[in-house]
Structures are given as C-alpha cells and as structure tokens.
Image (tube, rainbow, N blue to C red; front, side):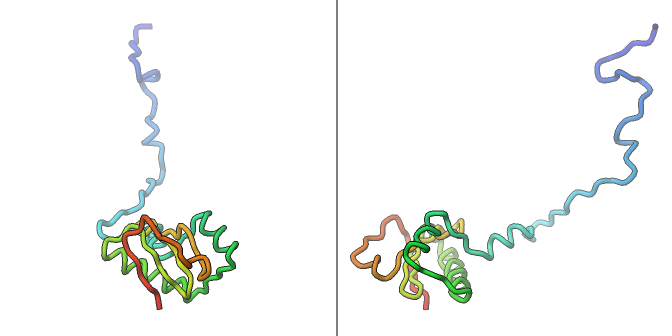
Length: 128
C-alpha cells in the first residue's frame, strides 16, 4: 500500500455527490421588494390570542366577516401612524390590539367597558 489517504478523501477516485445529481435543485427565488406569499397572508389577517378567544367566548362577542375587514383596515391605519398597542372600539365592543403582530390581545363587551381603565396603549380608534 503506497497510496496516501488524507483526511476527507477516504476513496481517492470516488465520484463526488454533486456530480451524481441528475437535475439541479432549484432554490426559491427571492425578489427584493416583493414580499413572499406567507408574509402577504400574515399581513392581511387579524389573529386572536388565546386570552382574547376566551374573552370573546365568555362575553358572547361574535365578530362578523365585515367587522373583521373593518378591524383589519383599522389596524392598517394605526400601523401607518406608528402605533404599537391600540384600543379599538368596534360595534360597542373594545378590543386591545398589538399592532405589529396584528393580534387581538383581549376583548371587552359594552357592559365590561363601564368604568374600565385602559392602560399600556398608545392609540385609540373608533371603528364605524
């Protein structure tokens, strides 16, 4: 045995794995300025935290699809103004929304809002 074997080459005449590949694997094309589908999907919808879902159910608050559309548009408006946490009054109900995540954090109905102090918000909007 006169052949030297160096680390990384156990078989000096072996074919590299890259040369055995028949079809190249295509990587997803990322075009700057054009958001990916997942990002577009997340930007269009309003999410609800577990706490908010429980509060909605407890208080009997049901949001209709058109109300969700108005809520989404309101989130866009307050986001454009730089809001982080917003109080949104929608159909007699109050929603606290984390604007960057587009997530409703909690919800109150009209009777729960009486004499309630809202803290840690930086903006408010009444949605007609």
